[in-house]
Amino acid sequence: MFLVEICIPKGTKNTLTVGMTAMRQWLDHRRFEPSIFRHTLTSRGFIIQIDFKLKAEAVEFSRNFGGCIFSMAKDTTMIDYSSIYNNRVGDR
Image (tube, rainbow, N blue to C red):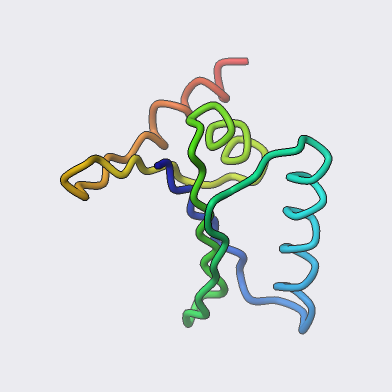
């Protein structure tokens, strides 16, 4: 499993709705099927967490929405891949 975590800062009243709608449309357009889609409200905004079975889908989604990627190893250790992929995006 590859978890992508995205922060949507607090702003207008419709921030969560607009952000999640954009993500859902993007996923549908590419026919990506995340395993789990959840959100949490924090003092800074909303944290969106999406679990993907395929690493390539997690990477593409993270690049498009500015998220961090974590891999869920069998022993439930989380490995942060975001610095690797975010550096590659900057190289383009």
